[in-house]
Image (cartoon, rainbow, N blue to C red):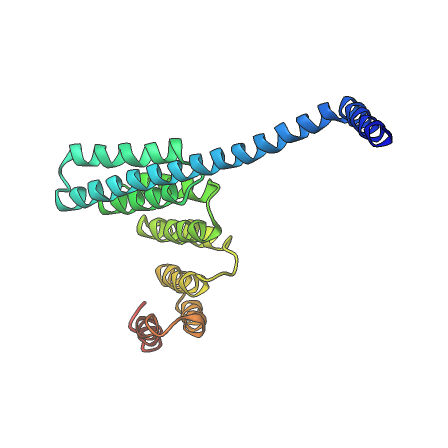
Length: 219
């Protein structure tokens, strides 16, 4: 009889505990399940978005190849622009969108539409992508400005660059700009700085540029 009473007391205690805590327990469980399934859903959406962006980028690459093989084809150019704009509109924070804009900037340079190229590069610089891609866009913007004959603007622009993995390339570009401005002594210093930071593959061209100035081969 005492054992039965003990069991009844335990059951009653369990009922009372459930009345006090059951609702919060179910709520906590529901929140935990929502978080788990929400996280899985977010991961699936991210994977799907990355896959779609990758496919779009590959389509862009194929279109750009067609543009470069048939530069007079407006249809291919418009197709490439469509893919690039779709990447920017729908996947603006992705590396694919930034790489697409860099690719289109190359196309516009080939067409000598430097303003359009700068617009693509500016988009990359103002986007949410990783710093390396922004550095590449900044470097290429300086080169485009130099090609436009705007050496002063190019120099002002690359002066905003932070020290990073592309410091040798920025130093070389600085030398090219200074040469265009007729400042050969400063240009030699820039090439010397680039040589100190460059890898073995880049050194021969830098040495040629520096030595050419030393011999008075450039005005």
